[in-house]
Image (cartoon, rainbow, N blue to C red; front, side, top):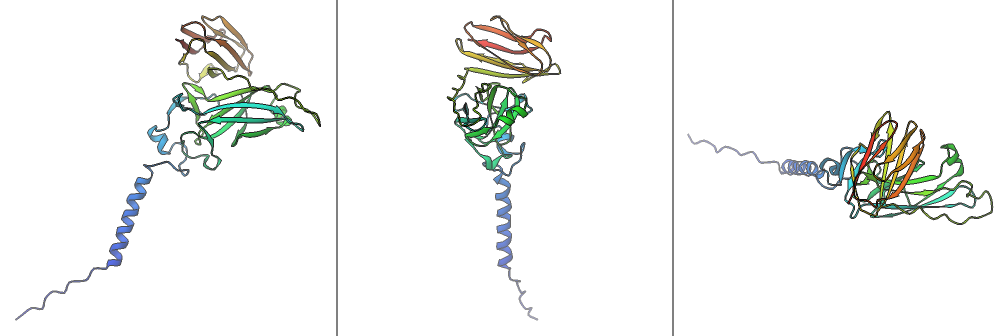
Length: 283
């Protein structure tokens, strides 16, 4: 008896194509995070942070709890700050940046080269976050934060890490002279920005702990060195070899500036608490 040929069940091309498209989408989606980081990454999860593509994430912080992101000096972000009294109230602050652009739409995302925002500090105290080149600083805000004259602008990546060259945050400082802001229809000449030092270090002492952790900083002979130190107790700052000293009143940021005109290894420490703050290697 002759058997009937077995009937072959036809495939369903619609299902096969759909399955292939779904599989391809899954593969592409899985590999997308290996490419350029996007703003949906939260701090600590961006591709650049995970692989170290953007600088080096240090254990040290900038003194306010934000870790330092170290990059090479060549091509690093830079900033200068200038202030001038406003004819109505307070001061107009101008931040001139280089190798950097403000990206307010991606704050909280991954750290991308030369992008981010700035923060303003008044004598070391946090004042404001800035997303552009201009900022109006009101007289009332200065009084509310305890007053002060040293206005510092510091640059941060979108993930809130602080851009740094060596162990020094990328920042600049200008002075607010008390009483220069006109109260009414007068005007005053702009105050020039303080010249930027060749090497600047910001150090904070709290509960006998030094932040950033003490390390070595290379300094070119003849360079201007600026040490900005804030201590939670009365103390004395001392630079060995240069015999430079400055009183450290509790809770105040003190700036010590000098020219590194001698070569060698020089320790910076406190006298009363006997803490090593940093070592300067002058070549």
